[in-house]
Length: 340
Ligand code: GAL
Image 1: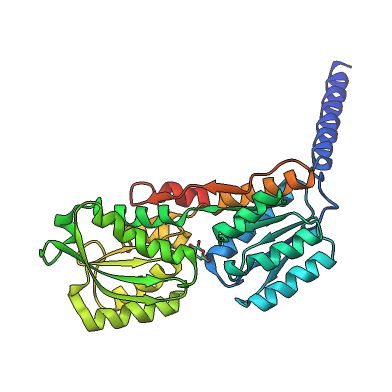
Image 2: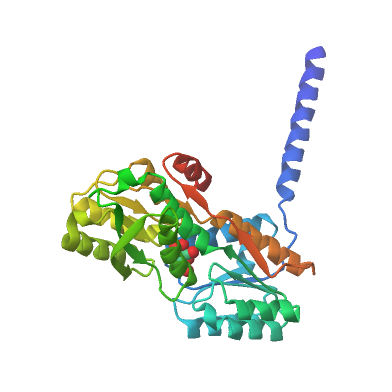
């Protein structure tokens, strides 16, 4: 009899647990299941934007949006295409528009379309200029920008290099730093600021530099590989530091450095920006000196939080900033763990 009662209690306990589990399953967040979000990406093949979009989608779903109601479009680096895509998303009556502009100087056109249709708009990653941002605040429009200040990333790149000590990086002992710069899209403010502020940070320490070459790699691995390979061939061991405006290009630089038989940390130094997984691993493997974490996780979460505030009719600031983080051998594993 006693045995029977114990068995009965166990069965009841199991049924209770199963019911509780089932209930948990039912409790998937569906708060914004019917709301539509349009995400416009400037170029779908951009390594950093791929990560950003994936995180944004994942986080929106965790906040109660339905995957099928989050529509991402790729402008393939063409502003006209993006304008058409925005128009179409507005016709589809999205509740919020998230735009990574192809050309931030065209933002005015996109803003006007969204404001006319009374759809809140969040710009990401590529910052529209001050005049455009002033329009949003002066008119009380539901438009904002979420992003980092690229000046900070440039400064951090310069600091990573200079923190090694001039005696370490000045390989030819002429008291100056000889470098090459591989730039992203030169129209883009991130590329411009990173190019300027990395060098300013070195000059700020009273150290002079020689720019051996400065070329456009358009944020792309293969383009950067070619530039760095040509420079290593032309200037050989005159190059002490290679600055890349992003990691995708730094990964191309690594290939060129290896092919030229050079060794990072010994006879050349290399820094990037973004903290792609591959770049963090390269730092741990000694193939790269450092990078700067362009925190797409925090940025994506801020974007989704803004979208929710807009949907709920709450006030949203016109500018939402996020900090970059220096990445060297000391914390590359930590950042890599965060990205997994
Ligand atoms: C930068 C990023 C680059 C590239 C670029 C596109 O912030 O570091 O890798 O994605 O944005 O505008």
